[in-house]
Image (cartoon, rainbow, N blue to C red; front, top):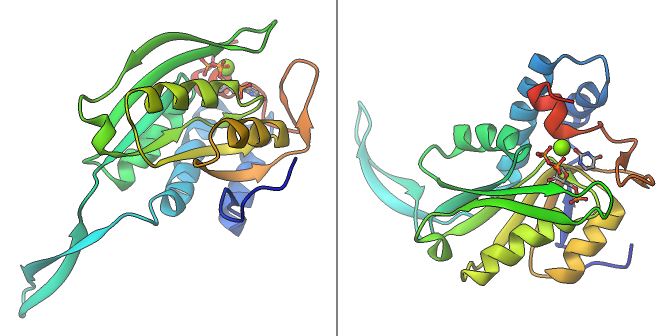
Length: 214
Ligand SMILES: O=P(O)(O)OC[C@H]1O[C@H](OP(=O)(O)OP(=O)(O)O)[C@H](O)[C@@H]1O
Ligand SMILES: O=c1cc[nH]c(=O)[nH]1
Ligand SMILES: [Mg+2]
């Protein structure tokens, strides 16, 4: 992987993330536990992904006195889920910011070419005025992430953060080359891709494990 600007990639190395990722990777982990772990990991990664949100003062009454508190302000959020597997992360993100708008981009990887094929897109009308956090558990070749972010930029979206659970160096290089302005936040940077484009050691097919398909 070529050198990236210092803030282009954040690997979240918190012990809770490392523990939960190990449980997630384990082939013995059930569908129900896999889903729960993805949601919990999303909260931990979402904490980092939302660090740059702006606050504004707000006056409130505590039971004892008036105080100047803070609330989210300015550019509002939009989470963009890359279907299907992105929806697992989306659930956790919405626990953190329930008022965020949500966009969906349906993509699957052609198993032969490993190119992303789009089958669905629905974005909020005002998505270009919102800060976008794109979510997908896996950044493998990077083709799906690049295709999704191409679509968002095409409709005028500004600062974009990409959140995944596992990334391959090939995917980070591909996404950073295509969109150097996009910050990548991941739970781990794995060894690399195998001949079928799967992340190794990885966790297998995230969508299949989340939804119990094959
Ligand atoms: O970086 P890439 O090489 O593009 O691979 C990553 C993509 O592959 C998986 O989706 P998949 O195509 O399996 O679709 P699914 O979510 O419907 O299972 C994953 O959720 C990403 O979207
Ligand atoms: O390892 C991988 C690569 C792409 N998509 C997945 O779900 N897993
Ligand atoms: Mg899949």
